[in-house]
Length: 105
Image (cartoon, rainbow, N blue to C red; front, side, top):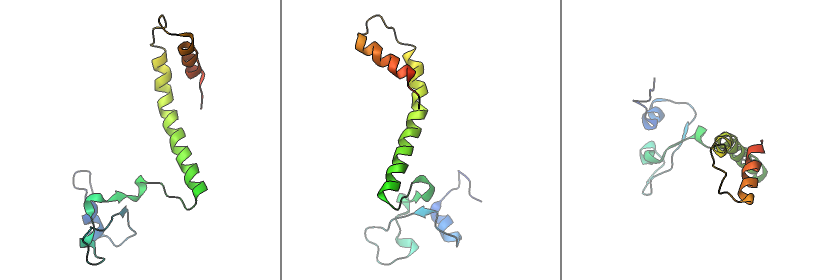
C-alpha cells in the first residue's frame, strides 16, 4: 500500500504489472528503452492531465476548465465587491461593480 509519506511512482512502476499510471519521459542520454532510463523526477500522473483526440474535443475541455475556474472564483469576487467604499469611484467603475454583482454562470 502506498501512503502520502512513502509514495514513489518509480517503485510503484517496478512493483506492479498493470497499466501505466504515469507519463515519464526518457532521460536525455537514454541508451535503451528500460525503466532505468526514464526521468522519474519528471513523472506526471495521467489523472493530472486532460487528453483529447481532436481539436474540437480539446477546445471543449479547455472551455470547461476555464468555466470551472470562473465558477470557483466568482463568488469570492462578488463578496469582495461588497467590501468596496464607493465614495471615490467613477460612474464607470460603479457600473462595472454592479455588472460583477449581477453576473451568473
